Image (cartoon, rainbow, N blue to C red):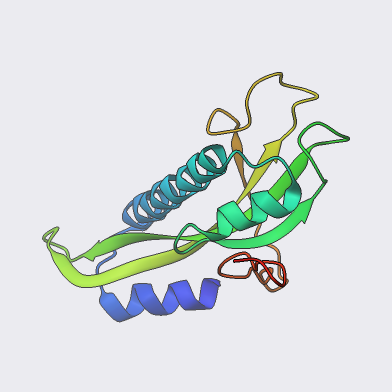
Length: 153
């Protein structure tokens, strides 16, 4: 990860100091946060109530990878916990604050907790998302669309 970011920084020559880089990293995190909000809205829209439906809803959002899931429903145990990976983007600018046409792209992972045993609210965008370290495992494989049972029309 850090090697990739280093290549982007040195190859573009747009970083004037550590403050510029810190601001760019913050902008990628903000962009990633917006994608996380899209996941939360999709889960709310789909009225997900089981772990498999949470995974499917999150997987429908472009650019989102579901890395981990635990739990079975928001009403039992510790609820449903998803860890998603998104890629935040921000334009790279030169020393005159002009866009170079290139982007800094960083991955960010968020932990989404849906637990009605703690919060008696509908599952959805009101639930917090925590920035977490990205797992080193591959993302979960999510079918593009649900399969109909044999004989269904």
